[in-house]
Length: 71
Image (cartoon, rainbow, N blue to C red; front, side):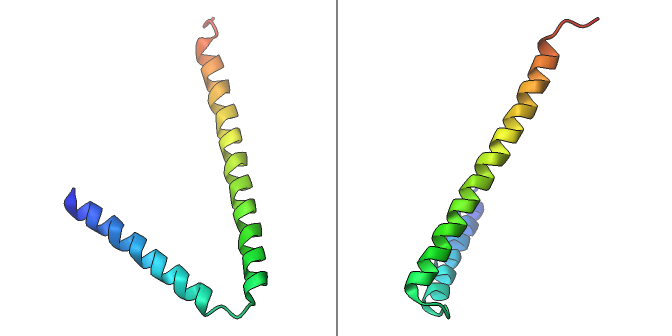
């Protein structure tokens, strides 16, 4: 368990360092970069919400099928 935690910690720290370097070395200006990041984050959140709604509808349909009397 400790090895797994160490792996996750290393991955998180590596991702943080990588993201920081990417922001510092980006070819875009700060304002353009912030707008792009905001747009991507908004699209990502919407994609997650759409996927969750779709999965919820599937699960509700399956639950309704299980609850209906069998003939």
